[in-house]
Image (cartoon, rainbow, N blue to C red):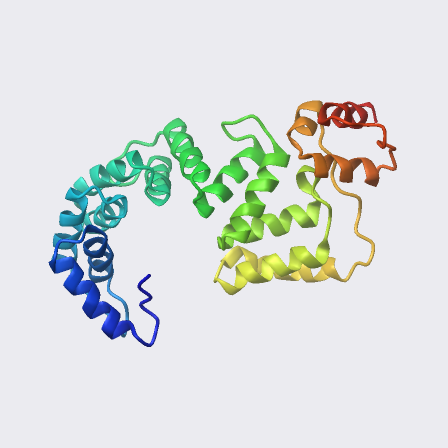
Length: 269
């Protein structure tokens, strides 16, 4: 895999150019993306050549080419970029789905604002593993915005997003740990760790809220987690999380075998 930051980058770039000249679609896509965006101190920006290579790769059905070409065209105000992004979406490109979701949400690039469409593409991107989309979907779920409120699922999405490195996901998971949202066990120190990671990536809100996290971490006795509020939310918890909830409440569940029995025991509390 080509690494632009490695010591061998000049040699690797040379080989990438040669492979692109020979018609290798993946190489055309990778080189085209680098040239279209440019890499400071590594690759001089050449948008014309970058787009040419990306078009060649797009014709070979490279999903990444549709995404990079679409982004480059939209930056120039060419609405054909949206067509390329939609084509990348159809091939299952998670980041392209996220970009289309944002365009529908904000009404950018002559897209009419369409919140149901934005939600549909956000779900699609999240299910395909885009970390920012996971965080955005979690935000919608935890607040019940256009979807049935589900704090447990939101917390899981925040956790996945955070572990994949999304700054907003790291902050949101930190807040879930701070508040015990969705049955998450309160852990002030871990909450602080995630907030610091988010702030280190330049997330402004995380930086502003760091004092709150630091103050909470000084408290040796965090409150009990916020328990799910309905049987439906309990059913969405994992078996492990259900066990944690029952233990936290001091409820014996040693005779429970099936998940349904754990849910029923927790609901009786």
